[in-house]
Image (cartoon, rainbow, N blue to C red; front, side):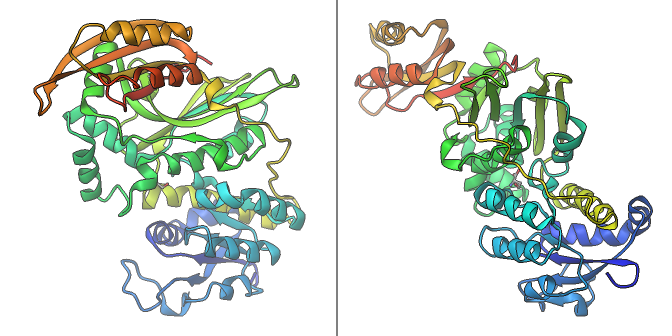
Length: 443
Ligand code: HSE
């Protein structure tokens, strides 16, 4: 604090950092009026202070050493936007140890080191804010922490990755392949240079862990999650999905099982490509948008929708936290730090999770194939609700392979995988069918 002016240290001046710096300047008047406190950006830590930037930043604000922020006794609040899980971890730790509240959007870091950092935050009485870690500009974190505070959360279902949603939307609307859709996303600057975490489900998984922590007070290790992406979804699947009344989304599912207070309780926690009924609102979340459906015992179903990434939307979330931090700095001692660990809730083994499912096999066009597939499901008590098939193409030996789509009633994932393993032992069934969950969002 210098005089009555609260001092902010900003670490990172990339896409989001630039948006935060610009907005803190542009909307200075309303932010000071709403926070009822004056503020200034005192120091900005960047990797290369000489690099040309697309915003005007006084050179004297820049430093290439983030310790200049954590060691500066005049800096009151630190915003961490450098990303990654190494340097950002040390920075946040140093800031909390120095008693400086931290604002971050770093979901990968929270998923990995959240337990330790929140305990440190609590022990130091120094808050760690993370609105921007899930859903970009969607105000989901503060909503779960404050607005929905009286609810026992029954489930959270989210479209949490904008890049994969853009790819799936392009495949659906333009009938193009995964590779072509991903290329277009990269050309438009939506996908990262390395889009692996976007399309393999892990970016969404890190966000799902943050949501699980908010909704249930537990932060399970990420290895407990079942995570798969959208790489195997093909244009053919969209044709079948459309015909059956669905679209395809990468869904993060967090669902509480067993009544509160009763044992054993557990959490379903997974990210998988899924069929979503066309009549559900989540089916209409297109392009780079994200949406999160929260079902609470008091409020019922709520849906939060908005831009899940990008300079301005993410800056909006970061600054919401900065204002909260400023208000709480003013009321010294008010905030004791968020602590997620109310209890450890085990993650339900994926084999036990149940939904209806869609399976698309590639099968040789010969007698007995459907009998073989249906016997494998029947033996494991998995009921078939519909079968559909389209003619495929001939391979280089002149053998015709067809698409065989089996819609299954709600069944355990373990039984489904066992039946599929049985089917794919046969030479006339391709070893890698496309398997999609069907989410109806009824609980
Ligand atoms: N790359 C992410 C997305 C945003 O495409 O949604 C940052 O988590």
